[in-house]
Amino acid sequence: REEFPNFHESQPNITDLTQFYKSAKQRFDESPEFKKKSQTNVVDLQGGDQECMTIWKLLCDISRGEFQKVYNRLDITVEECGESFYNEKIPPVIEEFEKAGMISIEEGGAKCVFVPDSNIPLMLQKSDGGFGYDSTDMAALKYRLGNLKAKRIIVITDFSQGDHFKMCNTAAKQIGWVTDQKLEHIGFGTVQGEDGKRFKTRSGDTVRLVDLLDEAMNRMEASLRERIAENKANITLDQVHEVAETIGYSAVKYFDLRRNPTTNYKFSYDQMLDTKGNTAVYLLYAHARLESICSKAKDDHKVDVDELLKKNVKASITHNSERNLALQLQCFTDILEATLDDLFPYHICEYLYNLSIAASDFVTQCKVLGSPEMESRLLMCRATAMAMRDCFDLLGIRYVMRI
Image (tube, rainbow, N blue to C red; front, side):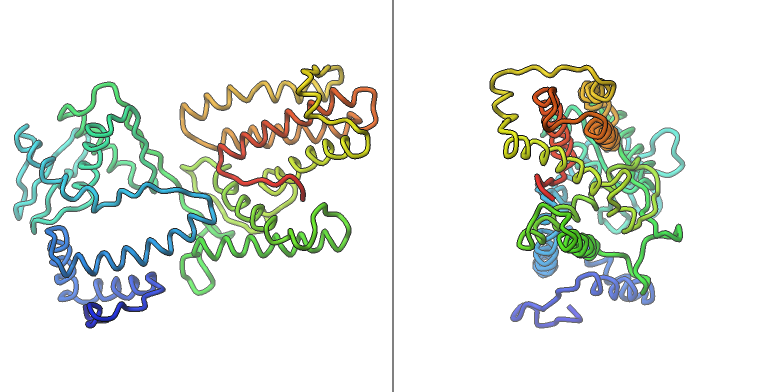
């Protein structure tokens, strides 16, 4: 209202909402008047004030447009149910707790619910009549259990909110919303720079995800151009950008997913894009190598692994490296069950890495092309590549057939 008083007639050009929010936060911390006005506007917004709603929808549209650019790059689809979705569902929840005799009116008139093993209550309604995270999260829990009939609810947030969601889940059980449903919270740690401090730019700002994706893609593109110049690549210059985008984005995802989400970790571009070790780059190269062997078998030896599969040709396991690879392939189901149990994707990442190591040892120790065992070993190559692609799909990671 202050920065863009004519927003009704002319939509403001607020492309960098981060700076806009930072400026507002600074005023909120420094000016008691601005702080009070902000808090009053939140209550008005939650009450449906028309002008507040117009401003809020404008900011949402700007944010949504920028978010979608990132979602598109990372192949993410979102069913949006933001805080506002639950706003009208909050009063009935408060009323239900009141009827159950679980509401305690605290100083100033705030409506609170106390749960065992917690010194602080859930505040379902603030003293000024507004609603906070406690209100929204309880309404969301009620909606998921009652309307969606969810049997398992998994909330993923910063690990510091673990106690908060434990309180919400306890309150839900106390009031009788929960029978045999599973309520879980997964907390993720902090991404740190190589100095062990929170990952920031040189100017001290938080690193934007879009900038991180750009940097990963640009570094990978430079690496691929070098490989082409050294005649070490199986792609053309025209394909570099698309392949670099796939590998760069996958590297960012995998670097995060391969760790226990509850722990902090140090971010490093060099480690993330390393062609050796437990990185997406190494795994994607390993996958491409297996598919390259299958392609060469068809082109140079007239043996098509797809035809072998159609004819139901069986693989023969004789060498120790073949046996080790076969055992790794057999572990796939066990890994899926472990992941479904605790929901940590690093199980799949570890399996994928171990499978790649076994495959690398196999193609090093066992000659595939032109050997008497070529058909059997081609089947092993294809089976491994298929398992790897299943893992990539489960992790939401793109892959390429040639690098």
